[in-house]
Length: 419
Image 1 (cartoon, rainbow, N blue to C red):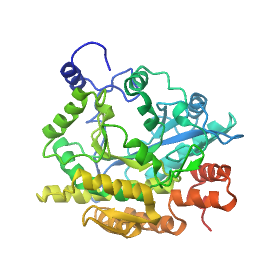
Image 2: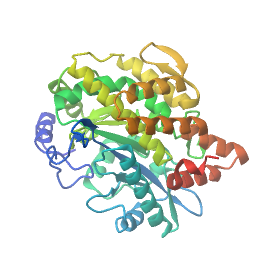
Image 3: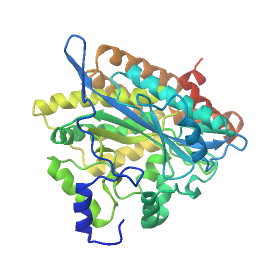
């Protein structure tokens, strides 16, 4: 946070100029550059565009510990096939044990899947050149990622200086899904419809049971750690974009965040893109799981857009109900019980996952609806990422087996655990 000026001054400046997510050069919103809907050959719209950001840990191939060597991996990955005008981009994260990829705007689940696989392979090959691996997991299994050096960046330095030990909550990896909605008023109402589904997505993507070499007792410890931050958690229900902006201003004035990129709600309006962004989910072990979550979010968004157009209000479970629901999903994951935020009762998490799929498929074209259905069936057959991590540990009681599984899944997908 800047040393000079009042809190209100900082809010005003932040409204005029968006800070780049990595700090330094400002980012000008690209509302006209990103197509928000896709038109089929017959002229009918097939839905909003989608994209994904994935975060990974850098792992030492010899010790299986998280290592602060992200700059080397990024340097190699940027020269490989995932970069370029039409491919995914790779970038640094707040600590030097983390790297991030971002897909371009995608039109179908298959297109998104192709970009995710290519980016993962490029990172894996770049890491291998330096005796390293990358692993898609919400928390580092071995090694203390929270103690890793911070990436050299003015913004990251300010965040760490401002929030002290809360930096531990940022040494985690997530999967963020973007769905294109250009109109902010509409986007706010869509977010109201999506917020109640976030706990189910947490259960579906739970992939962080281990941290610091021990089982945390939670399927998604990342969700628990991330909630430590004052600007994280379920978003409140908003009636308008102006109300959304006032809530963000309050967080800026209070010091709960330094800029608008630090809105860490489970569902938010992106600060620099004309999208609604789902941020509740762990980094998924496989590209297939990331695509499944993206298609579910896209389908739910399309259904929400219909409801908004028809004037149908979103269900409004309280923030407290959603926090409890997120906690239960983080604790049990896909294999246990979930706290249904609609009926306020415990039910099998898999039942809610099927209900979410049925709702989402109503908003997907047939190819994507079928793709999502087959992906969910495959996931239910092998178990969630958290379940697979624990199963790998149970075989011999070795955490290195867990990391080895994560490395293989990250590159080879569900094929690494099927059949």
